[in-house]
Length: 601
Image (cartoon, rainbow, N blue to C red; front, side):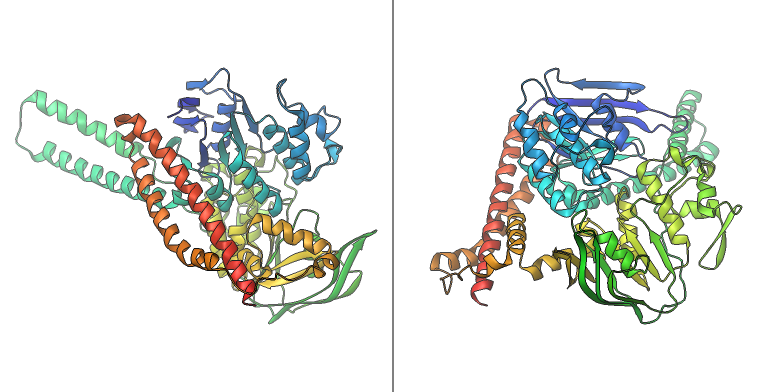
């Protein structure tokens, strides 16, 4: 097994009160792909900053290999002092680094390099920061929410680039599918401590639930043991004084351990405030169009949205999703066509910029709009502190200024305010940004079960698949098309599977006349070899999957490395080889299946 490039051991950091980090650990070696997960405010970003050398811990040790290069992607990159994006990106290169790498990354991230830092949007700034940290091809990449503000095509490209990269990776992200794709191990930061699972994020939630259940059983056993010891002290036969004092000391230690135990963090209670039902027809748009100068954003688009529909708007940044959303809700007049809104509409909006929030405003003042200590939710008057608890804010944080919140906590606060307003139409523009996994799960349940109507703009593929009843996507030249189902359903209906196929489809869309003149495939049916491969591949894939599971189970044994380091390294190599074999088989099967469907018409 390769020696660690980076090691954090026994890290302690306190900002008054309960320690944020209390003995946290993190270790990364060459080839590691680590997902760092935990609740909003649990200290994930702080731990990453400590790893990058930007924050000093109060206790613990930090080791970085002297020759190793480490690059850190912050949530808010600082570009002050740079004339353009290219200068900012190239400043991250070392003397021996390839300058062409910066050009390659800028092109694939949709930037020319001539953009001025002060004019960049949030998505453009994030892409520039990604180019800067990836250009040197460092030994370790530390990425804090790399997918925020990125459109789907860039997220998918970034996945492929990171999978191919030789850099070790530690990443914080709310995007489930992204984490499942790029991670091979998971570090869970919980109540100041870290636990490590030598499996990717896809296995995290099952493991986390098992750990919490075992912790609850141990705490229950400790409580029963305390009861038994107290009974012995009161009613047991008097033994030697020395023995009694020993047991009394043990009892005091058990009591202290029992009282000091911090239970698992609570679960947010998220519910939208109900309004009276809207009419059956919520929105009807007929042949609407919108242009800004020579740029046509929406052209001749029609749709009919009914009560209970959950519509996802998908597309690259700048395609016009927010413009189309504003036209559908009546906030923006179309240049041509008509939009008719249904009756009894009560709209609650979460905008992309998260509403302007005064950083000096307290949490309680923000939630109540300064109207005292109470607010009305679902027709019931509630104290603001009780409502804050539903969203996992502690009672003593009611007077805390908004500026002291983490990005995820601020997102949760604004969501609490939006959901307190009575609504039968939810308009959510990028609602998943900065939310932790548990809060994201609850938001998914809320949107999927909302009795009214939802209009949703998101780049989160998993969220769209779990919530949307249909998605609207751009088709070039201002045209938009609506597909039934979620994001994956849309891809299937467009006949597009892999990233390479999507690029080919996009190229074909941009030149339809050329595509129309292409001759049809001359083959009328699959060859014998192709047919045999199509029939045999599922069984072979299942066998490889079984082998992968067996290898992962071996690596899950915490004592495996200590017992036999050489065997541990061989097992990791075998696992990687099997994963690559499975990925190759899946790609081959998908290509053959798509070919079969095409030939059969």
